[in-house]
Length: 223
Image 1 (spheres, rainbow, N blue to C red):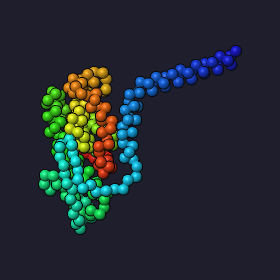
Image 2: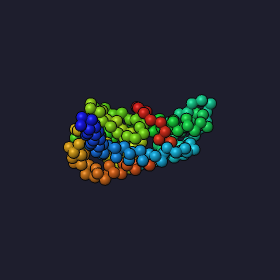
Image 3: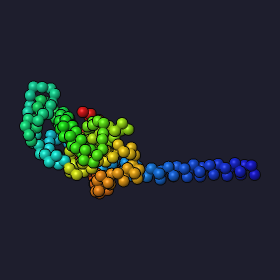
Image 4: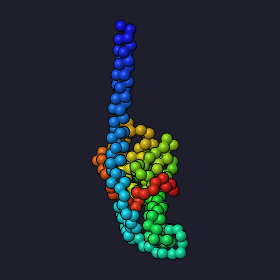
């Protein structure tokens, strides 16, 4: 009898533990689904592709088109600079395709910093919210974030998105200055400031496909 009771208690404990695990998974279902969606969105970028030097760069968020010129010099390094409106010059050891792409990612980060800082400030003023600082990064799976100190971070790849989607990310992160979570109250604030929030949020799931491969390599760049 005592042996049977011990076995029953063990079975009950295992069932309780299994139930708690399932409840935990269920409570995190939205978070898990979002992460799986992000992984699926960038899965096509994980294959082995031949590196290429882009000849042109389109930035829909800014309605800009850039032509890229390559100039070989004796320098062992590679740099990219804005020569004039609509033209980027990449100079140095341009036979090194990987280095050329890295130089263009640095250029992209600088362009994003110049463009996103005043844009974010303007959006914040429009909706009446405040942030303390802005950093621009080259992240793999995040369009933006906001710290508890209301420091906003934006991905330089936002420049490859349609303008309304890039703006939505800004409003989204600014709403985190009110609610540092994704609670119902957060979404209520977001939908008030951006009536098309739900539709725009869904579109972001596939938005990574708009980012060219050369811009996806590398991450963590901060300006």
